[in-house]
Image (cartoon, rainbow, N blue to C red; front, top):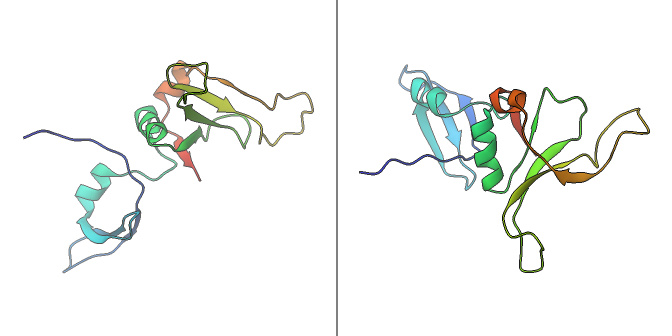
Amino acid sequence: MKEFIGIKTVKAELKARDGNPGYRVIYEDDYESWSPANVFEKSYKEINEMTFGSAIEALKVGRKVARAGWNGKGIFIELQVPDEFSKMTHPYIYIDTIGLKTTNPDAPKIRVPWIASQTDVLADDWYIVI
């Protein structure tokens, strides 16, 4: 049997069933289920507590991500997948600072290719930008 790993966004609330701690889970397609607390907590983290690996997986499925620890709000990274009109031939990650909220008038508000620092790679404060 093969093993699989994935990333999806769910909504959940703590809700015991038959006296057992667990979570009521609602998936993106509105499917609803119940999961024992230990199983759910091993599989899911709150959106603002992701690892770099989870952030990369989120990028691969079309989500935008950012770090709580970044200086400035309104900054995120996204995966650009080239189309037939692009000069690029391979997907790449870029950072978008166009929506940066700052009092510094000289702060760049641009989109440029992005490379992670060691601090970014080891951080656990990644979150999905909604």
